[in-house]
Image (cartoon, rainbow, N blue to C red; front, top):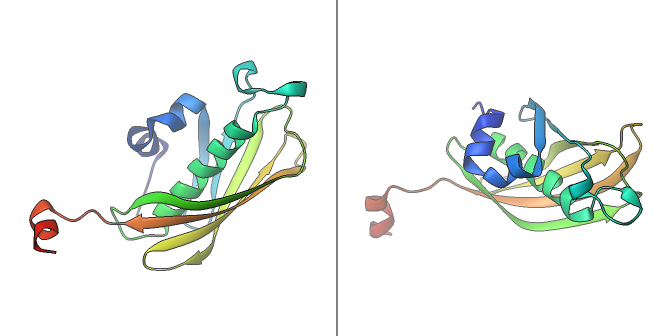
Length: 140
């Protein structure tokens, strides 16, 4: 299955609003970047934790979708974030599957700063569900 950045922006407009840019979209790794903007910063000028969690969530959801049945829609059910150090400048995320099942994908996301130092580590569980046609849903 192929997913493009435009597909992500269409299905999840918040990802574009946040400013997430994707550079690699494969089942084995999703890489994304969040440019530092004053509007996304917090005390001390680093990127706000919510912005970093948004970056991680977007990368993890795309990774889960790429590791699921065609047409599956991702929905985060659990996310644990470890903030290790502030991110000054752009944030670079790499999301990779840890465990893939029929209905969920556990994804690890590493976020580094521009120097390559690890700043945030996220483990996220993303459920994946293929929407059923209306007639099939009524029969269930």
